[in-house]
Length: 392
Image (cartoon, rainbow, N blue to C red; front, side):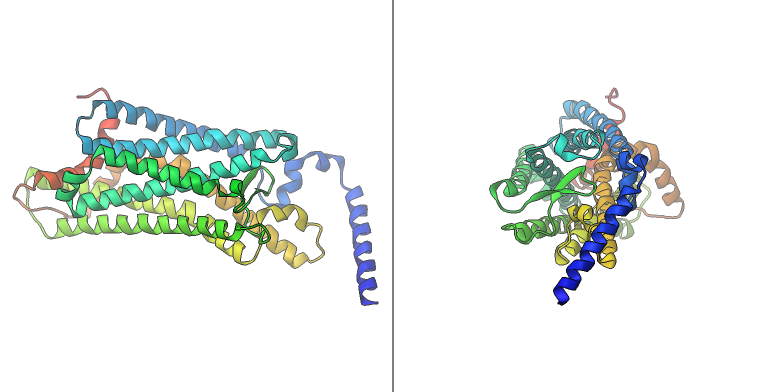
């Protein structure tokens, strides 16, 4: 009896829903973007703007890195250029592979099936998102580790850090991340379309798929681990620079150079840390939350058909946050070339003037060992040269 009553109530709700749908204006039916706006901000302007700005910034960074790399004779300085160039290339290539697909889906009125009836494009999109996302995080960690070693142990760094080692490290990072991203293709995990149906990513709510929870949790844990490594190494670097400044005093030319480079490096590292935290932590934390609650972003489209309005609102809230979080992670691809390279001459000098006005950081009067000075100067001088490619 109770079951029959529930079924009748469900049929009544379905009938009422159909009657309400019949009264929706034709304009709203045709406007897919407007129709989905109740679940969040959906606009083709986001992917177009992000693709253009990302291509401009990363292309400019690659050009400047290439020019400077050809001129550099110091192999240790070439190591820095290889890392920056690889990061810009990965960010640029990731945008070129994914953004056109998103724009095509918007042009197809948010109907993914019109451009990918087989579902293979969704898997390709998911592989790209996973590969280029983790590669960017791991490259940031690798550069943070390199900076920490250069500051804390400059003599060892000078003797052992070779261009060959940098190339091998970059190749290993990309190869391992690509293997991990291909696990769903081999049957471990799953890539699904995410709300509003314009992109594909790791499924966070399908426990029935073999290895799906392992794959999703591993991605989130690897991302958080990479963030922690980057932040820890940057803190170690900043601490080493500040201690060097506080324990030494002097007015020599070398001390003034240390003062300037220290201030610039600390400001840049703080900027890198803020960008990474703001862009990546929301996505990684939200993924773990959605995994624990067995919610996936692709459930937004079916949530409207449920009768539990409280659950419906919760699912849509998660989907709104997930869409915003993935946009923030994509924003990191746009900001990378600027925080690591391009904004250095535009803003960093002005920040340093302000910082020097309230700080008396100095170093000792005697001449510093050249290897230690090179360790700090490595990143900064390369960035300066990139903005003056014609000078010699």
